[in-house]
Image (cartoon, rainbow, N blue to C red; front, side, top):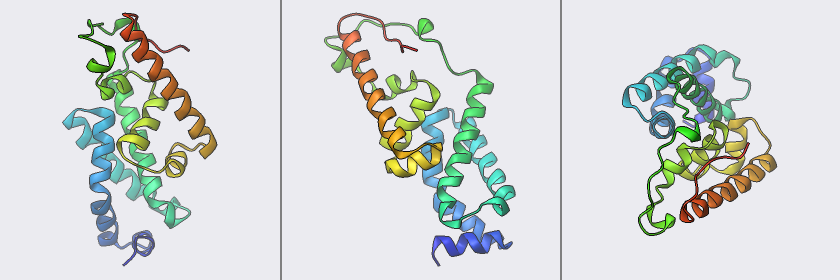
Length: 177
């Protein structure tokens, strides 16, 4: 049975179809949640809340072929809510600077650098690069146009490049607002 048929069955009250859909997406949802909230207990919470929210809102889903994108959007919203509750976002001025060993390129942990990005930028990088979601689908998930996603991605890459260069020169890493 294809996914769209399972979504339709789930919308018509078939609980097994909904569970199969969630089982199908479980790995991808876990990886996205892990990349965003990091803590195992928070990952479990956001996944549970996502499943409950998706189940309750399933009748409002307009087009079944957008099911996966729709569920990922719910997950991202749950992750953002959890991060806001934890007040996980740390201002750049409070980030402890370490002395780079040889060059900034030798010491860069890309996940740590990405974690320093603002929420919307971090989501774009995580979904596209870390989760290998096509840019068109990322744009749908983030509710932006594909051209906007491409432009933001270009700007983020330039920003990350500047950060690495600043680090190499012994400067501080911070995002210009």
